[in-house]
Image (cartoon, rainbow, N blue to C red; front, top):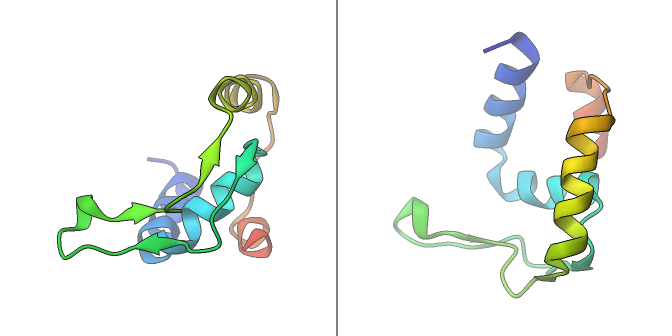
Length: 84
C-alpha cells in the first residue's frame, strides 16, 4: 500500500464517523445526507453510518465511476484534513 493510501486508511479507521460523511461530500452523492453520522452497535460491523440517509443510486454510481476514472488528482494528507 502506498504512503498516501496508508495515511487515508489510518485516518479513515481513526475517524470512521467522519469518513463516510466526507466521502459523501467529496463524491457529490445525490441524495439527502443524515445529520447523524453513526448509529453505533456493540458489534462494529453492525454500525450504521449516515442512518436515514437516502440517495439517488443511479446518479451516484455514475458520478462515482467518473471520479475514479477521469478525475486524476492526488490528495495530500493536508488536503484531506481540510475537507473534514
